[in-house]
Length: 609
Image 1: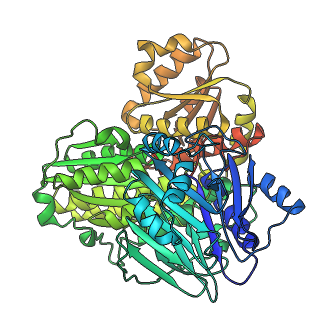
Image 2: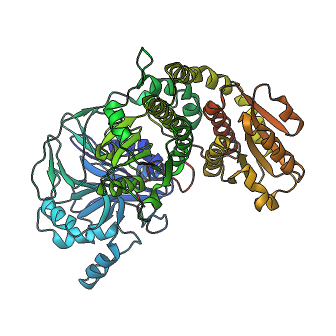
């Protein structure tokens, strides 16, 4: 969570910092602030609660002029959103300033120690501890004070720090939370994510865990926590800001939904050659390795976890190998059974999800092989996994994930087909048939997207409801779980998914006149049972929206509204039905007047536990 931007050079720092924060507002938008060295004896600091626009409006009245500065857009963890709790935080004299992403776990202990020494705190945050700790250790060299402070601080952090006495440098440090350095000509940058600085440079350093960086306008020095210099290759970013712009769509989420035919094929082509051969050998998943695997875990959070549920379904179906799917935030705390015969597949769109990162480390401690599926090159999870498989979703800006979810499913399907073929569970003919079925998805998804206007009309009919129930059996249930999450996170309508057969074991008590029920009925062997479930909720007055395959028109006799998807084989319906769910959530949010791309209380990259 939270976004950090820093600039040092010959131009006006405020312009660069604010522009960078605009690109990172998806990371946090409870409040924002900036500190600039304006040549006075203390930093000039402006902080405003609410969206970044509030800070921009304040700076129009009182602009800050100077050649170095740091800024921050916040997602609250300690202390409610307010001007005072906003970053940057500072010492009493405002001669030291700090911006921080992450959590200082021992901040209460440090705060008590500092208060005993006479330090006064004005905010409720953990970050203010860092400012006063630096002050207590500062003897004219900020770098030395930072090195000492990092031996005391416990937790996760990306830190940007400045001293008024040292206007020629910014000091930054990283542990668990993402941090990059942008390399310019006569100017350099720090940021939490690449889009913040992409307008100015495509050359970056990806800062690793437990590293400190000294940034000057003409130089960058990367060090370990003892101050020993570290060599690092420059990463050149290939994509540009056009790829991260809305491209004529009203919201990023809408754009990203419509990009799915393209990114599914790009992800598919990244692993399938012209002879229709899937290759994951670079991920360590050779036949020889897989033959020695005794257990497989898929570990993830949120939407990625839901993709993992689908992955379990298809891997088990194709290979008959048992797969467990685990919520990352619980995995490492329950003492899971892991050894060197365990394969752990972790999924994370950002590659920075802290719960997933920590679960991955737990697995590594017990000797498991870690394969990461992520969308962000050079992210923490990508760097720390044994092997990484990239999805080709491109930049995903909207907080509610859509195309990242679909491309994660694509990789998991490819893994399932590849493993099944290696274990002689399917013939070459079946293998090629499955690959061709994946290639056919582009046309099928495009066809589903043609009916978006009808989905908008359906959304308008249930807009004022307080709850929506999502149902399905088998694969349909796994897709329903993600549909419910999409709805609740951006429309703010209470939405829950249930296995259709479980509804009568209690939850059907909540079905009343007009309550919307969205049900997937795409699995042929479960079709009759699913129709019976529709009748059960319809008899209690539910307003039923069904998603079915073309040709299954009998559903119209029992549902109030039916959306048809192309009649693909059952195991591929999830790629199509999820589009309806994504569109429904999108239109519910839009019609309610919500900020679709930036839902309240949420952020794109979850770097706290």
